[in-house]
Amino acid sequence: MPYDFTTPVDRTGTCSLKWMVEPGELPVWVADMDFETAPAISEALQKRVSHHIFGYTRPNPAWYAAYQHWWADRYGWRIEKETMLFATGIMPALHSAVRRFTQPGEKVVIMTPVYHCFFESVEENGRVVSECPLVFDGSHYSLDMRVLEEKLRDPLASAMILCNPHNPTGQIWTKDELAEIGRLAKAYGVTVLCDEIHCDLVDPGFVYTPFASVDDTCAEVSVIFISPSKTFNVPGLHTSAVVIADPQKRGRMARALHADQIGSPGALTVEATIAAYEEGEDWVEELRRVLLANKNRVADFCEENIPGIRVTKMPATYLVWINCSELTDDTAALVKHLRKTEGLIISAGGDFRGNGAPFLRFNAATQPCRIEDALKRLKRGVESWRRGVRA
Image (cartoon, rainbow, N blue to C red; front, side, top):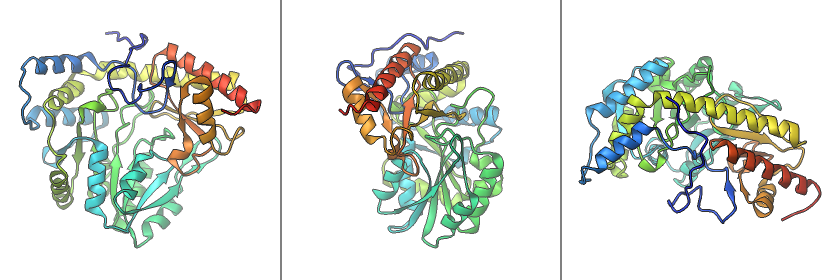
């Protein structure tokens, strides 16, 4: 069944964070797709709304089964029902986990550059970020296990946040890499808080490995966060699952979710999740092909038309990581220039720390006509920047 990934959808007037912009501006920043969600989800929501009562809600057996079937069928990970907890979103749950599995002043290891909200989950809760910089060879990122071990060995390190696959670099961690992370975490008594929200958004021909599925050690040390929100573009429905094999950790997390009052679904979330995972696979497979074509278009255009910037081509997420180091060592000013002169709203790489400052993060999850518009604006903006024009 073909789906429409080409017709622009007007999102103005919908309270969309991404599209709360001035007339004529084009946002390609926050990780929010401009595609209509899978039809099965909309149909499930419409059916639920037609009931006209929206009372207190709990996950039903079909909610658990939907997650179980998706991960077993696609990734070979068998999730036991009793290991699953509902949470209203990955980031609220991550904040709760940081508070529950660490103490104020302790360190949380984060592999940088990485999703900027991870830093907030640590620092806003009175903990300390311990950066483990990823190694960048000019075109590819990798993890130096010796550096990671040094960070985990620190007596103050009590947790690690793992992004699997990695945002913004697009790295898919191998099974061997994940196994070594698990081994080191167990050796030094560190809990791995693993965000796997981008797991389905990998290029055709690539598959991610769930961290907890690698071996018993990885399952033992981990708290896993999964959700349909990124895959199906439904973050506004506030739904996720936390999977914890270790009973003690699971009990602690359950108490944390209850204490923070983020452990109960809204009236519309259960049916949407079930529809996504039970009926949305064809839509996801077509989406993956669309996203790869969009990412390739961004990379090809930049290579052919914008001298001095290079795309780091990696197989996961719809976020394109653009190296602007020949233009500037910090894109913060360039981002302001692009918005002021071209109305292009794009993310500055410095927000992701590590070596991110010379990079831009471009969200390619939009219609091809908007991709073309954004690329033309980027080209003009870089050209005026090179001429010395400053907004």
